[in-house]
Structures are given as structure tokens and as C-alpha cells.
Length: 158
Image (cartoon, rainbow, N blue to C red):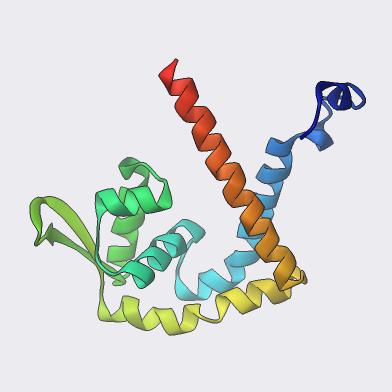
């Protein structure tokens, strides 16, 4: 853990020292690397994340999908509408709870999965990074997400 004296040794406000800056630039650049893989399928990166969740877990309520993707329903709704217009998903009432909206894959949406299976190895190849290094990065980012959610929870409680 970094101590206050270690922070004093560097300019704590230097742009290149900011975790938020590194995460922001990395996220923007990685999404740009995905773009040439997704565009031929007619998907944006956020739509791809919706499809990943549906390929993995099958029909999902909007509430569950929102939680999985950590997106508010207002942000998720236009994504789902565009996927429905593309013929990849259909929206309907959840048979377990008629009040809830359920999202499920269409035949075209399920078929798209075989094309998408080429994306992860393509991204690894484009990045030119060792798979173990990417797995370690994923582990670190998952820890950052958990820590930031805890911090936000504490912030909301005050």
C-alpha cells in the first residue's frame, strides 16, 4: 500500500499519475480496437456487452441485465431497442413475472455468437499482449471495480 510520504515524493496531481486518466484512455483505446471486429456484425461495443450477457445467461429481465452490465435501465433501453431493430433480440413479458420485461435472443442473435467467438482471440492478437498479462489485468480491474463500488456505497451512506 502506498503511504502518504510516497505520494509526497511525486506530484500527486500529475496527469500521468492519475488512475482515472489511465483507465479512461485504456477504455477508450480498447473499445476502438474492438470496433473493426464489431462493425461487420452491426454492433457497437455496448450492444456487444448486451449480447455477451444474453449468450451466456439466456433470456434476462431488464432489471437483471441492467445489474449484470452495471447500466441503469434508461441507458440499457435504447441499446436493446436497436438490437431488436437489428433482429438480434426480442422484448416481451417475463413469463415468471408479467410485470417485468424480458429480453431474449432471436435465431439471428443466437447465430451471431459463432461469428463473435472470433473476437476474443482477435483482440488478444491486435493488442499483442500475453494472455496471462491480460488475465492479471482483468483481475486487477475487477478489484478496482469492487473497491470503487465499496467507496461509492460508503459515500451514499453519508
